[in-house]
Image (tube, rainbow over the protein chains, first blue to last red):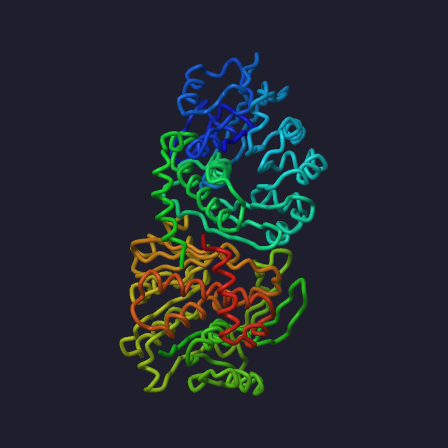
Length: 300
Length: 300
């Protein structure tokens, strides 16, 4: 089955120990899609300004993405400027320019309403809710957010939690939204609040998953060459959802664990280059080859 | 085969959110032994003062430990006072009184020199070296240390690294001794310096293992009820070495991974009570039962 992703397509400027990139494609929906496309058809719902280069649109199309619901509006594309210092896991935000994102109202085609797998990547929770309202009985809905919305639209986000199957968060977000001081308690609390399943992304320390009954835990793939970790969480989500959508069927424990492993492997490629440099050159065979290595690295 | 452990037997005073304990048995060798004894015979090499309660000696003997090389010297037992606040993974040291540990010269029986598995738990690296010099061709030697020795006896510790099979460190120690900013690079660097294998303990984020060729990685067992994490790293080492000593044979990748899982499970029990409260009541069946749960939690 195919996937619909709502999120941002941005122009990112990134300073890191291994180099600088100006105005490269970034954003939650772009990173997610570049991994998810390896598994299934992906329809992208986002907005860019009329400054977004045509060749970048062509690049996204050449990667097989369905851009029929990518709006191009008069104004500036969402622009993020970030810096990484010694710790390549921690991005310092130097500048955020919302541009056309400030007025974003997602619209989709009638046939897109029936898409079974929906990923609500990080945007305003009210925008996420409005998109979700357009969908016809999706099979699986996953939700991501960020501290900014947890702090400014907490109520709206908590309400949305009850309407999704999986809530994805990084450590800080999970602790902040649940107001717990321990990830195990945070996962349980977010489940009680309403998310059927909770997926906590811990970067280089792996992931923790809770389905309301049991915990699953996976380390990260040991990445030796970290260049830029921007978008690693969304790339993880792309591999995770991509695998679930491709294989379909019931979400039993075994399938979820396999999907977590696919997500980890996808994220491990993302950090090896700036922006989409590495993930845009992947084919599914690369993912499967590394998954085999990952199995050796973690199975006992 | 049996295990010889050199380290500390201490009296610990611990303040934590769930309670306070005064002068309970602690120390690296005590925590290690309480896990390792579940797998094989353990000979403990340490020193206590004449203030160490006789009933505590009897308690250690009742757990099957060989105390023939536990010295009882005139003076005070090593005493550590620590506190845990919100983050139960981070101990704040309030007081350290070395007592008789300051003059410790380990001595062992002639028959103990032939013990095949040696764990050099955290004490002065010169003391660790002197004990190692007494051993006759041990099959496996593992070494632990701490930031204090990395800072004050760096050269001595680096020299010792070349003489051991496995160097165990927590994240901070691994980064500090290797002078790297990334755990993968730290493990490789410590291997180049001389440790045949490197085991980095990341607490609730699991472990990373490097054998000079490949990395193995395991998450921690998801511990829901953390009371006191003092000694968790040594308990991990006890389960890890205990399993290796019990099963013997060659240290191939599969066996190492199983041993890492046993270590993780042992540590997960340790944090459920103060000091040795929980681990001293364990039998091997408890470990095996939880290992089965752990497998479900991490295998995909």
